[in-house]
Length: 242
Image (cartoon, rainbow, N blue to C red):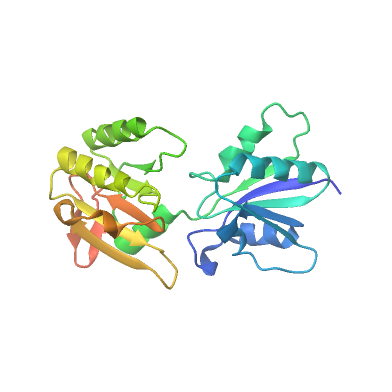
């Protein structure tokens, strides 16, 4: 039997948010490849080999998956959320460049943390929005700051991934400073931590009240645009432009 690779999104955390398409791929797989906590979400069974690895070896992980598929294995590379959003799909295609033995590859979408958080909050991404990864591991801080300022100038709602790690806690402090300068102190900002899990925590405050400690690496931060407002317990952005 010829090998294949499926790059699958496991969703934001809850089992019932994993798509049937992804469940079918996991059931057919011989090997699961991914970052340690994501592989741990996959139930073990006879005949299934798990290959957990550190989050800083994405290209090595992708090359390993390609080698196993070339040997006839049925490989699922797992990501949280959606595999095409700051995740393993692009790493796989980067590892594929220059190879002539490409296996069958499928990218299986999942529910992103950003969209799951927005649904819990109401509809803060109801109009034009952008997503920005605040980690400077793979891009310079100057580029992050440029994108923040330009997105604020364009009045996008913004969703932020990887806002504040233990190794770089100062970065998110600077992000909040930039946003206050560009958007003013009254703009609504929401912190959605561990959405769809038992540890879920949601809070929305004005930018003036936001502190770096409100975010960690399990938090998606959503900044509204100039029209974003509250209605009851919800936050929403109107689809009409003032």
